[in-house]
Image 1 (cartoon, rainbow, N blue to C red):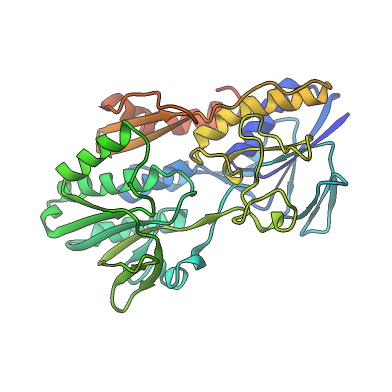
Image 2: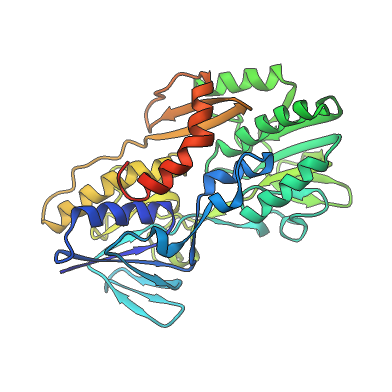
Length: 383
């Protein structure tokens, strides 16, 4: 019986486990998931919380409710991986051996990378929607905000869902208009890149929206420091922006367990084959989701497509065959552009796929359909 160990119980880990369990009998494989948390979160809903479009109870489930039937779950934290000897060690003192390993450890928020962020988060006008607690506090701040400088700053790529700060800022603009206070508010969104969004035709469409809706954009702005006394955010490039309400996309990194292993880059994102989703040096190890350094967006949509490919390739390796399934980098990024409209940016490593078109049907899918589909189908490996 093959021992398959999945490190990480987020979207990528659970989707992979479900597809593996659907494909392998109990006699063929023992599948174990290890994660430090006893809860599973639907993170795409975090951007909706500040605008009253989602409720907290819809975004959280106990881990035991999402672990696929026939899979084992260990609530513990992996502290080291021995790729040569095929085992991991945990904070709880366990040594877990494997025949096949799936790394699905996600991306972690590194608040301390921006000076002044961690100690001021949730107060002094400094907020984020990248945590559930932060999204709830931001909801209160938006309800009370009557005027001044509203600034969304983005840490350098890569971070989870690059479309999130864009949809958040566009929603904020529409939210303030509906409250009748937009004329009192100066809105700015920044990016460390040369453009707010880099993929065409979506980039040009978004630039037009920003211009028509009087939203300022500032590219080449890498946040380095937040000064709550002066109410400014400074950049490594030497610029600064005044804020009355600041919304921060914090820096993301991989887990520190990869340091010194030779399998990760300088920010601890795992370097695997972007098509096979496999480590070249350790062919019994596969990598999925936000923890990988694949040159595409870190989204649940990407993880869903990756899970299809990963499972096919892992099964091939189990059967002594060459892995031939290919991940193309395909993702779909729903960008809400206003209440009642959304645009789907669909692309892969090589090309853009969908038109840059705002549609009411896209809004319905994003706000009302994706969450039920996630819990009932995607996490079960059925979609």
